[in-house]
Amino acid sequence: MRRLTLDNGLRVVVEEERSAPVAAVAVHYGVGFRGEGFPGLAHLFEHLMFEGHFQRVEGIGGFCNASTRQDYTDFYTVVPAEAVERVLALEAGRMRAPKITERAVRAQTSVVREEILGKIRKPYGGFPWPRLSPVLFREAANAHDGYGDHESLRQVTVGDCEDFFERHYSPANAVVTVAGDVSAQAALEAVSRTFGKIPARPAPAPVSWWEPPAGPKEDLYRDRLAPLPALAVGHRVPDPASGAHFALSALAGLLAGGERPRLRERLRRETGHTVTFSARVGLFDFLDARDPDMWVLTAVHPADLPAERVLAAVDAELESLAADGPGERELRDWRTTWITSHHRSMDRLANRARLLGRFELLFGDPVSATRLARTYAGVSAPDVAAAARGLRPEARALLRVLPKEE
Image 1 (spheres, helix red, strand yellow):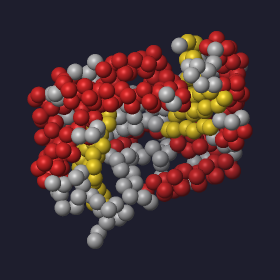
Image 2 (cartoon, one colour):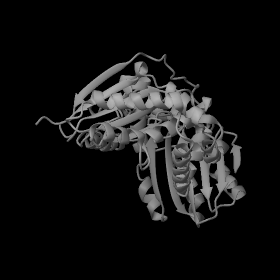
Image 3 (cartoon, helix red, strand yellow):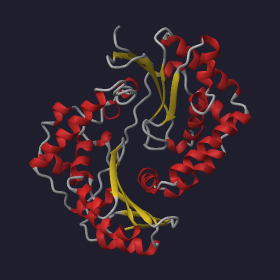
Image 4 (cartoon, helix red, strand yellow):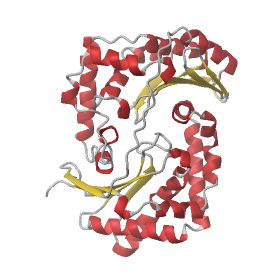
């Protein structure tokens, strides 16, 4: 792996991966929906940056996509290896001067509106995100809906978007990652040629979105499209720098993942009901945000099984794991499952480039992204027990979903 910082502040990460004649380019900008100021502006600007871009990338045989998360927005492309410099030139053009017009703003506002409506017009839309965030957090940056309100977004002006670009889309607030069938030296030279002449602009000052932990809070809403009731439990988690996320991830997997997850098996034994669980550490993904972030567990359960009974099972399993930890074989099996899944994900070049880029942007350490499996393999039963002890019932947020009325 090679790293470089250009004179204009742009950080560059390059990794050679010669298993196939393709390459990925990812560009991460250090602004997500927590730093947008106007709800939904970061997501809208992601769409504006794509104006005409899909057609250009598809024209050279590639595909591209983007996402807006808490602390970053990323754009990623996979193309035949010989087309890497053409993609870099396209990305440099967007970073230098995107075309922001009234027509584009109105068109992309309409596209975002359809995304928002599409999300809420389906069963369990907005569950658990973004509805869980305001239950767990109090500060607007952490609690608000990153999609934005489509009626409010109609008030966004070209000037708002230009100001957002000037403040957040500078080379000094970005990371370019190239991974795949490339020469590292040639890739670094190509990035220097295409991005190096973009004028330097200051990066925005670092902002902490930390807020004091709050006590328990509950909310519920009726989803008239949902066939069954559901609940989501959210817990604040320690800063990623603590290393606790690995044990919290193992805890999530033991409770809700694999062939015989603890929670599903407990409720089958005790009630005869089947409940569908999922759990993870990270609102969107593992080590995907700075502090604060959340550990989240969801359950879709039969109507004749009270939510209180599901929560009692969650509490009982957490108490059991906090006292005794998992058995070594159980933990070993889950570690193997997680590591296998991680390696499969990294076989997809876009995922690999995005992971390296976000670790550089968020934590200043892309090398640690290549060691995730090794670190996860070191998670012990006492680590999981300590993680379980940290998820106290009196500190959780609870979101309940009531299904359609009969």
